[in-house]
Length: 402
Image (cartoon, rainbow, N blue to C red; front, top):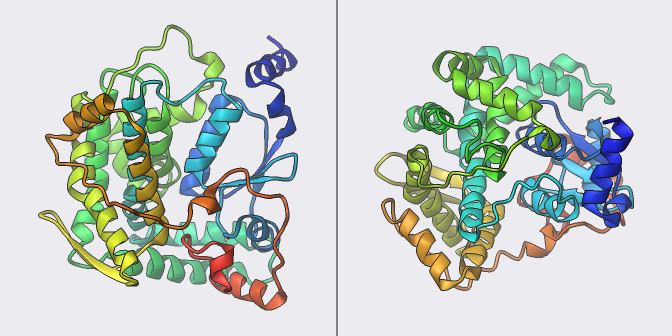
């Protein structure tokens, strides 16, 4: 089949509305956790897109005025509207480019997939950042790469930029995210536990839920691709300890929806390989989300969190994670009674899904996609501040300079 025929077939599957959005212009970074996650989905769905490695000029002058954050990946649609944040982005792309769906049809499997996606995005993040910024050889390499990429249009010497990024990332994502001499073994070993669990899942199937990629594959691809499989220190561990996962990373990067043949075969979350993930979510991640939301409601900037495995002190209270909890709770409550019972039964060996009543993060509107095409005004002083410090991930535009 010719390239033109493939595109015509995709257009027919997507429907006429998708033509309003193509081609997508994707602002990303080659070292970015979430850029890899999004790029893999676009490749799998075979959605035409233009790849833009975002410089500081792009972030300040284009990305921030339209999305309220200096974060990638973001997408500019052909009609001038924008997308941000991979979780709502995936939902939007699934609705508007439905070919090669990655979302489970069963509502219980969909809820579980969304829960695991959130865990991969928010809880695996710390270990990925630890392995990147804790060890000198990886820290120096990545700081230099980020400096050369982000500061490509800025006159600052790249060595100074590399020093700045190494210091900032270490302070923000290690010291500022609960990593200490006491918690370091837990954070480091989390990576080994992830690899062991994924090896079990991949022992008898090419993807995490069967013979074709689904949402959970793209969720774990975030940390496993640009961080764990490519950064020198964790990549060596993956090659030596979990070649099955290393092979899966390559498979995920290469797979195209049109090339997946045969009838779909999907396993479920009763597979023994999910034991570690479900236990970690119920014993650690979900309680942390509740604790974070309680601290946010109390107006605190930091919190402590402890269970039988780890004790974190002075963790940053993250407004965005209140939104994550709110979205997951809403999805759970939208299930009918029998489906909620199925979820509860699946999670029962590991704990109970405690809900926080009346939770309102106030962020839902900020993540309704697509975003308006109109750019917000940013003055020179604000631009200089953004260049120096960036933006916190939980402070959209209206809250940053208010």
